[in-house]
Length: 366
Image 1: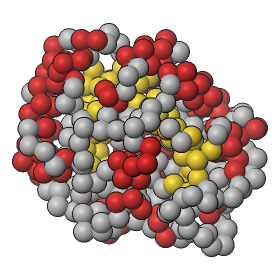
Image 2: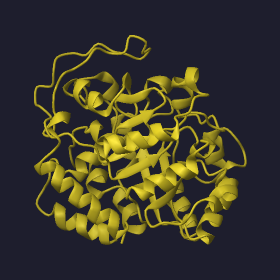
Image 3: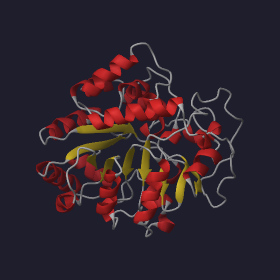
Image 4: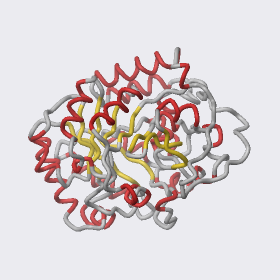
């Protein structure tokens, strides 16, 4: 199977329950004022003419938990170390992290950053989230994995998710340091030898050669890597260097043959989301499906755009003016096709077609 049975069954049941009876306190539409200290704020235009089909049935699928934003690298496409420069030395407490996990209730937690291995409580955090029955993707650049993997215990619900944007030369160029690719590969080898599940995460930029991604996946196959995630780069406000990022037309061109890649390798992105990337399906953004919690609070509206930080998850769900975001409503959303906004829409079956369920079942069984 492409995913552990516990994740597949748990997510299916969770989605079914919440689609039938979503928590009513999360469905109130009470848009708050934007954060006056936000340097990337924008004045929204008219409200969405056609309401989002899930606007009144909002619930989260994956929590993006960022215990810190400090990192040992300065990757070209990373906005965190730039947007949160003033708070780069701050870390969430273990209790704050666990409260966010409980408050949100999402069945999957992506522990990110920054570099999560720099977080002082990363091991107890991982253990306590697993003890709550959640699935974890610990998102890392891989440079600490070789030395620290033995501090963790293998678990079918835990993945080390290593970021790799290409083979050695191009990956090291993207992260602005030589030797990173080799160290990440050594970390993967150690993790696999210890019995851990390992996935990789790849961002596709203007200069990315998709043939190189194929070669990367062939190489990772020899190491026993379990799965891959892939998504187009998005030029959000903190790193809006358009020459390295992709327009919507660029994305459609880059991902036109993505089906061949998915048929050959265990890619975690759903086939419905990949349809969207190659222009064969339209999906609305479901940003609330992947909420982000960090040292400043609940980040609104999404992982990539910051118009406010909220003290509680309920405030994020009820005070964010969801209807003013998305393509055609906010210019910052115009070229975004990143999985944190659209994979949730695919999982929820929005704009579904006859045969989608059978196709998804075949994909899950891998």
